Structures are given as structure tokens and as C-alpha cells.
Image 1 (tube, rainbow, N blue to C red):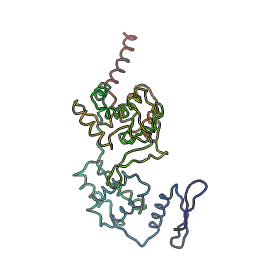
Image 2: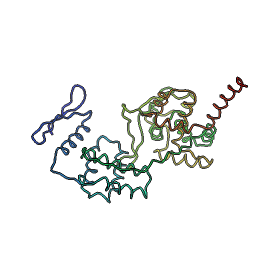
Image 3: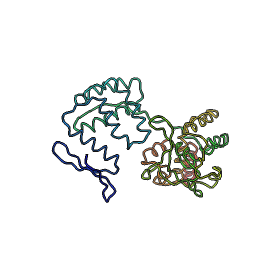
Image 4: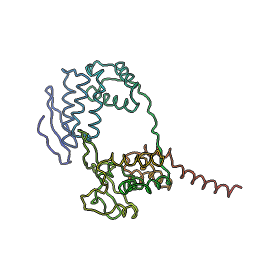
Length: 330
């Protein structure tokens, strides 16, 4: 590969020579450029026939510098599932071969896991053999069962939680923050009543919890204004001091599960985000703002949340409609 140069636009470019031909390749980052070069060189090398194991390993390695630690860890965990077909020739494996693999795998695994395993295999095949046609029937997704808590349930959780968990519940149920974002929150991120969400606590490739900045281009990097009462309960501390004393997201989940079981509730901590979104929707807040506040990149999740609307809000609005029409029609 020739020298990498940075263009005035901020992108990166290099030239690749393959089979007597020159190709100019550009990308937004150096890491992405290296990945594109590696894939281009392979695609234009007709002498190699890789195994399924090789193309999956190469696919992951080429993206190791641009994928998040959690995605890389997930990919590494998935690799072991390809044992039955890992030595198959990537050029000769057929749709029938892959369908049999998927069918056998689905017998002992959930539709979601099956789709994830096939998804990585499919992406690797498309990358290295873009002209290879594969058609596979996948198991249907099981709808996510949400148990969105009522306002009364949230009040109970807040009343009976310890101070640290109470802060976490407030941040999620009022401002739609995720548990990793809550664990990463520092007092320096709070200005007045506004919280800047720009970091996450995630597992790295070695399964250790690490602090990670959220890319500024991501919808998850956002500013959330909270009620003054919530900010007051968060207390004060040094700029680099964590607001929540739980060391990682799993600690939040562990304490929350015990609390909700003590009260016979079925909701997950993550459902508190859905609660906040449902309340905003019931108040007539535009979806665009709800998405921005919650860091959602699309309205698909919001729509699934609305289909599981809060029982007390449904009852309240039904009463409003019935009272209005009842007074005027009878």
C-alpha cells in the first residue's frame, strides 16, 4: 500500500497496485481506509480460496479498529458456533449447506442468536464474495415482551430504593438514560439542570468494564434537561467523580432486580426508558424530540413502546374521550 495522505476534506486516501492496475481508495478514517484496502486486495486476488473460518476471522480482524468493543466481543463469542462448517470452502459452500447449519443451530438456540450467527456469516461472505448468491430461511423473531411500569410502580421503586439506585432510577425514568450512560456519568457532565450524555461503561474485548466516550456523531451523544428536583437529588462532587457509586451497569441491574422482585414487578431497568418515552408520547411531545432526548436513531423502538402503552395513561385518556363524547352525545 502506498503512503496514506489526508485530503483537504478531512478524508484519507491511498493508492493500491494490484495485478498491474492502480486503484485510489478513500475513507473517513485511517482505520476504515486500512480495512477497505485489505478487502480490495483480497477481492482482486483470484488465486485464493478461503475457508469459512478464514473469511470470518479476516472479516473481524479487518474491522477491529472501527467496531465498538462490545461488538467485537460479541463477534468473538459467535465464532465458536461455526465449528460444523468452519472448514467448508467459502467459494463452494451452498445455500443448502448453510440452511442445514442454520436449522441444526436453531434447534438449541433462540431466533435472535440464530439470526446473529447467520448475520456475521452472511456479512463475511458478501464482503469477500460479493457475487455469491445465498438464500436462507431464518426462524421468525420473537416479539420483545415489554413490561412498562405504571407511574405508581415507578413511585414504589423510588420510595423503597437505596440512595444510589434511586438516582439511577430517576435518570432512566425521567431522562431516558441507559444504564451504561448512568454508570459513566460524572459531576462534570452536569451544568445547571442539563446533563451532557457523552460516555458509556462497556465491556472491552477481554470482557473488562471500561469507560468509553460516545462518538459525537452518534445520536447517543446528547444533552438532557432534567427537573430541578432530580438534579438536587444527584448531589454534588468533583468534576471527575462518578455520580453513581455502582462501578458498572451490571451492578445497577443486580440491585434493581432485587428491588422489583421484592415488590412483585416484572419490568426490567431498561423498561424505565420506555416508561419515560411513553409518558412523553401521551403528553403529545413530538417523536423527533423524544428520539433526540432518548438517543434513539430511529422510531422503530418507539413504535414498539407505544404498542405497549402504559395502562394508567390509556385509562386516563380513555376517560377523557368518554367524558367528552358522553357529555355531547347523550
